[in-house]
Length: 144
Image 1: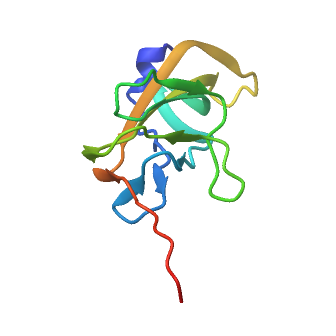
Image 2: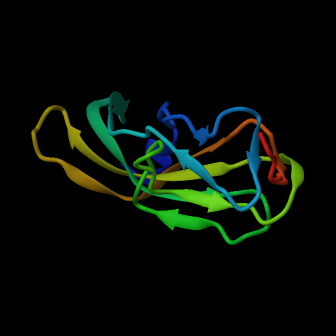
């Protein structure tokens, strides 16, 4: 069993959520992201032999689509107020997208032997958010 073998499995990426989820975010305010990527198990056949395969997310690479360096974490992130992965955009723009690339570590057992063995290398999935606008906001003091 190789990384190429597990790459052919129908690994569910886990989704990508951007918060706030309103089609736009503000400059210099955290844009929060997370995925619900989780461990998965598959049964397949390799060279006429039944094989069970488990994959789990090993790490996540977040690209915020603004030219900043991608961020690699072992954390899938979380929603507000417990967020752990976020990004502050520094300028207004249309059509920004966040992309998360998940590397999946795998292990397998042959014919229900109960002995799990690691797969060398990783399977990879990539997801992108819907495009959104990055806006600036201006505050003004008013008198009631």
